[in-house]
Length: 364
Length: 264
Image (tube, rainbow over all chains, first blue to last red):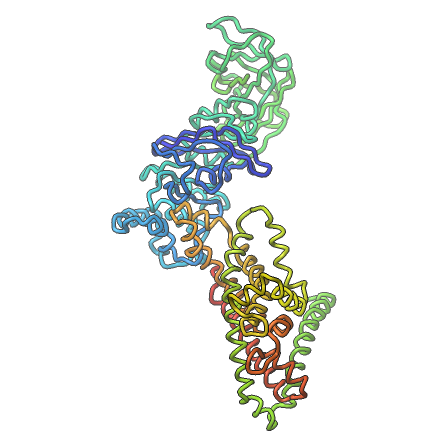
């Protein structure tokens, strides 16, 4: 297990305070934060290249904050990969095994398997300058994994790749992780990467940890408006608690005179009447009701009528901009293309929407 | 098809470059006007001429060796680390460039007349009007330049390579000679060659500190000066041509190194 306790880094304009991360053996942990938030500084401190102001780092049962980088057993894949240009791919790959004075024979088979998985057998005698961007990523990953590190640090591993290569490398990373289980800490600002690969996520904004948790919990239940905004959440509203009458009742919130009924379990703390909270409605969980179609009881709690203001097409879904008649609240609704075709929607059309319980989340 | 303005811009720029080339080439070719006379061949085979060539080669090589010995770690420190007084240290590297070589030589003469300087001379090595004085003068002239050139080469190498090498298990020393040195080799070699060339052609500081004694401290540039002073044009031309030949070989060497150690 990897434990980072109260890591504080002060460097130039960067201020990272009391960072705590815990990664289970074989886990894939994401540190997700905006660009320029000091994520690389954190990796450099974990690696031992930068001395943090304070904090403790544990790799297994060894405390390593005073151990030099070469003895920590960490492999690092920087954003620019830093493949050694004066060494052939083969020499790059075995660099770590040689540098750590490991027995080459013990690692030979393992490296051969990795080379096969990465499909770079034909590149071993080439210099990095003669590799494509995707091939370079593969070699850099292999070089990092070859000495069987106790912790693998990845800095924006999918940045700067064409979409098709990005998908390839993303799959490769997933396969590698499920086959070899390297304990991995990956920093990124790319939500898609996190969604595809991450087990656990630490959301890191303005030098502080804002939320830690399982991937789905963080994405679906952001702890604060700050986290929700960072994750690109649409349909965020400031709401007031109107009613909260005991455990069996639903919580009633008001936004611009419009009332929303929230079931228990979708808000974190006690909600006193008159308290101001943030309501988050997930665009992909909002239903546009077809005229004359039967509506389930579970959907009847939150039905609103309004007008379609605009429709924007994306690759796999359509974004419908809808404004409620009462309260003039603007919603962004994502509808898969196949469902959109059946709805016969157009700009200016008056329709009703229903909010599934799963679409609602309240942040205090 | 390029428009008229683009063409004239292009030819103006290339014309300036050609002018410089013609200027230097004309200067060198003019030397050949006197080549071939009896005095020319005599001067070429004169023992003092051969001595000057040998002395210049040896002194410049030793001075460059010491300049690299101290310059390479200094350059690395200036390129990679933050430390107190770094700015001042960096500024002092320019001293030999802003100080005239004669002033530098004179400063050494003054130093060797201080108690510490006298102690060094009596208990250690004699520098004033001696061969070690040539090496010292040349070293003083090039050490700053060597450090500056090497720093520029090291600056070009991303510290990220070193970070990765450290994470993969290399100690700082191993990282230096397995990653940093090979990656900056092209620039470092060019720095060494240019430093050596600068030492080889050094005159002012050397003549001030070591004097101009034929067969003892007379390097090639000094020999050119004394030959001209005694109106021995043949000898002066022989030495100038040898200097030019060495210079051209060196510059060609720098270009070859540049091509040989490219990794991008």
